[in-house]
Length: 181
Image (cartoon, rainbow, N blue to C red):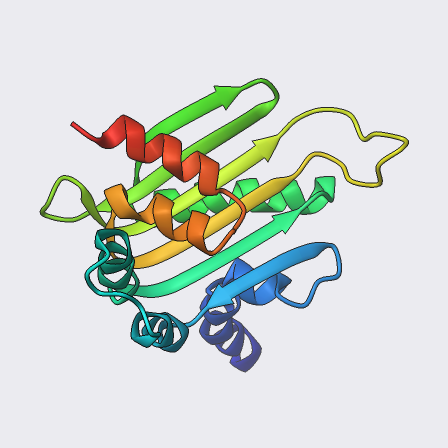
C-alpha cells in the first residue's frame, strides 16, 4: 500500500520533467536555452535606441521568459520530440497556427493565444525533415523543437531568431509573413 501511494505521489513529478531537461546533456542533441537574464543583458547592451530595428529587438527580448531549443538527427529521439510536441500541445490546449511543407521539411507552429491577435503567450515549433541519410555526410534528417514563453509578438520573433543566428529563423520568418494582415 505504501509503495502504491509513493508511486502515485512521484509519478506526476517524473512525467512533468520537461523534454528539455531530459535531453539537455544528450550527445545526440543540440540544446539551446537562453535565460531571461541573458535577454535582459542583451537589451542593455550599447544599442542605438534611435535605430527602429534595435528598438524592436529590445522590446521583444524584454518580454521573453523562456527560450529553449532542441535539435537532433537521431531517428528515435526525433520520434520522441514529435510525440512530446503533440502531447504538450494537447495538454496545454495550444492551437495550430500554421503548417508548412516545403520539399522534405514540415514545420508546425502552435501557440497559446493571448487577448491580442498577434501576441501569443507561448509558441511551440516543430520542424521535421524527411529523407535519407547521406553516406558522405554523417548528418541525417533533422528534427527541431522550439519553445518560447512570454508575451511573444509574432511580428518580431523572426527577427530575434535571425539576429541570434538560431535554427528555425527562416521558418519563423514564414510565420511572420503569413500572420501579418
